[in-house]
Amino acid sequence: MLPRIDAIKQQRLKTGATQKKLADMTGVSTSMINQIESGRTKPSYDTARKIFDALAKLEDSADPHRAGDFCSRDMIILNPGHTLHEAIEKMDEHSISQIPIFEDDRVVGVITEDGIVKRITDAGEHSLKSTRLGDAMEPAPPIVDYNTPARALVPLIRYSKCIMVSKKSEIIGIITASDTLKMME
Image 1 (cartoon, one colour):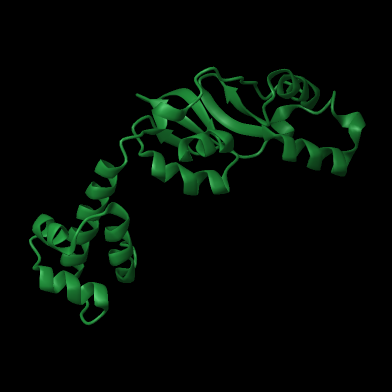
Image 2 (cartoon, rainbow, N blue to C red; image 1 turned 135 degrees about the vertical axis):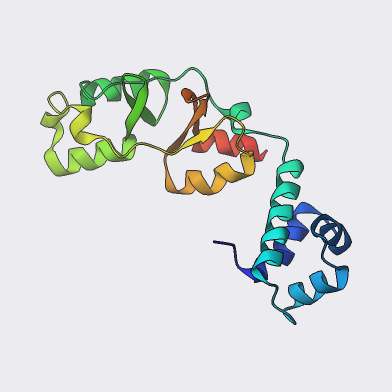
């Protein structure tokens, strides 16, 4: 499924490309690009696909930073058998607000400060030492490839507390909201 046609102009301007450059990249005339952007004509599916593919290439080349450039490689991880109490101790010790939960070499969930507070509110403080992370963890965070453009991370972090970064199918790091703030600078 393609993005909305009315997004073409906004995406083009975001990359800094001219209508002529986009036309040259797609084999579509500059006049046609102008008509599409102004809403005077609707492109065929193939033409729209060419335009969005070209815009994606422009965006990738405009952003030299990749997920691997921003991930923290010194991850603190726990497994489903650890307790909420142990997670709190690790969070406090390392000044972090979420910890990925691994089973063998794969991420199976995440425990967050928010999740712990919710658990305490629902079940009470006495459950901290007895509740296993496997029973309290949130779903596994998204996993992106090491070479994912950095600009693609911001929308992801809005919906997830963290993002795992993989290289050749191995998790090598984590990106948190604070990492994306550093990236924005």
